[in-house]
Amino acid sequence: MIHIRLAVAMCLCATLLACSTQQAYEGSARPATEVALIKGDPKFRLAPVATFIRSVDGVAMGDTQASVEVLPGEHELVVDCVVSSSGDRHRVHLQAVVEAGESYRLEPQMGSANQACVGVVMVSDH
Image 1 (cartoon, one colour):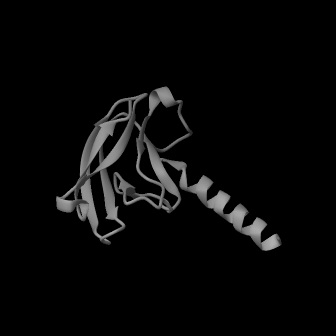
Image 2: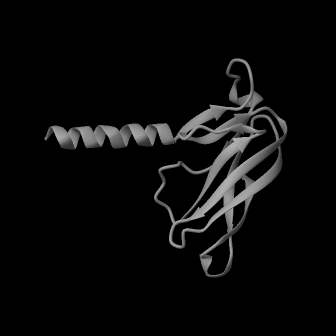
């Protein structure tokens, strides 16, 4: 019974950590109205296709962060697009301009037969 509780607790912790957001600017945290949120997929996701944020403006993302808060303006992102069925992994460099108070999500662009990722685009999350 203790093993089951420990396993459940570990899964819960991993899920909570996978959903955390990293701050990609210096200083104290700012209100959501002053930053933009860019969302990738949690690192522990069991989906057919996932986008993982590797770095923003040259700063590496932590292994537990699925999203990042940035200041308004232009940013360079390095994103991995992973297709679990084929094992395809495609690294994409994106230049993105974001606005304060907005939320964006990264979407994979699939090739033929959905076996390969050919790119990633950032779209408004409205």
